[in-house]
Length: 296
Image 1 (cartoon, one colour):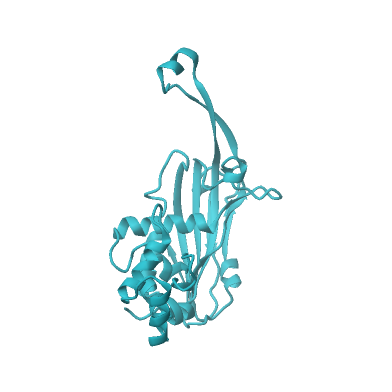
Image 2 (image 1 turned 90 degrees about the vertical axis):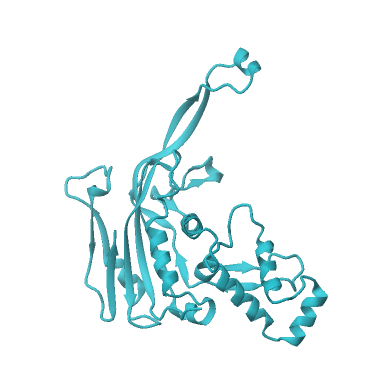
C-alpha cells in the first residue's frame, strides 16, 4: 500500500442546477431542501458522497482496492465477512474469540483490510459493526475526508410543476380513466457551494488515504454529476473545484480563513441569476504556507 498523503487540504465545490431538483426531501413530498428561515437551498453531504461513490464505482468497476462499501443492494455484513475470510477466521463467536486470544492485533488487521479494499472506507470512513453479534465486526473508521452541507449562494424558490400522464396501464383503465395528473418540483436555477476537509493526520494514522486516492477524489468530484443526469435533477454540473493545500500535515492556516477567501457574487446588473455566467468567483490572497489550485 502506498504512503499516505502528507499535506492537509481544504476545498470548495461550486455546482449548479437548472430546472431540476438537486436533493429532494422525503419528509416534504420530495420538495428541494430549503432553509425555511432564509430560503437558501440545501444539499446534504450524504447526497454528495453518494455521487462520488457512484462515479468511483463506474470508473473503477470493482477494481481491487477501489471497491465501494456502501452501495445499493449489497448487504454491509457481506463485505464485512470478507475481512474475516481473508484472515482465515470463521464467522462465529467461538472462532473469533479464539482468534483474538491468539492475535491481539486482529481488530486492527480487520480494519486495515477493509481500508485497503474499499475506497469509500479509506476516504470517508465507515461504521462496520453491522452484525448482530458484537464479536463479528470490523470496527469503526473515521475517514480523513469530510464534506459539509451545500448551500445555495442566493435564495431559491422551488416551483411545483403539474404534469400529465397519457399512458394507461390496463384495458380497464382505458375505459374509465383519462389523463393522470402528477407533479414534480424544480428549482429554475441555483448555484450551490459545499466545503470539504482532508486530514493528512487521519490518513496516516488510520486509513492510508494516499496520493492516488486524492487524485481519484478530485476527478470524482469534478465529474460526480456527469453520469447521474436525469429529468428529476435537470442540468447539474460542477463548475469549479477550489483546492487549498497546506505545506504541513497539521495545516498552516485555519480553514475558515481559506473559505472566507472565496467570494461568489452576482455580476453588476444581475437581479435574478439564471446561469453560472451571472456570477463572479474570486479568491483572495493566501496565507503563508498555503497554495490554491482552481480546477474547472
